[in-house]
Length: 152
Image: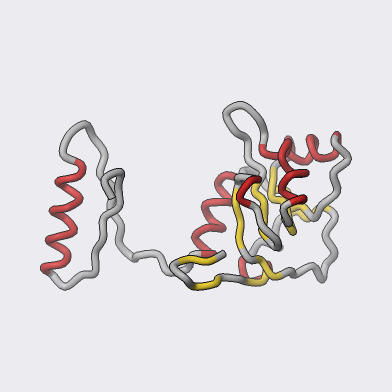
């Protein structure tokens, strides 16, 4: 995965993913991981596919596509494992209770340079202004700051 021109790749063991229930995985299985997604269309070689329950389908229905695109590993729940077994799909799999939550935790480990302080603004009116004001105040205090939203 390339982020801002920097190539990111890590061993599975570096990401502390090996502690979950392993299905079809040898003890010495420690591949280089080059990215991840819960969208099978975005999977590339050596990626992890997070098969999460969606609004209409479970992500496990797309495991074959993810494997075809180069997925090395699937992370899913009991429902996903059942779907994969019913389709006779065998791929190294980590069984977790809540794959969506594990995806968030995994993302935090993958992108290991998150800001120490973050804020979020919700409500009906004034969100963009508040975000700009906070950023400007922090910058005046010599605190590196950025704001992200629908306006940029």
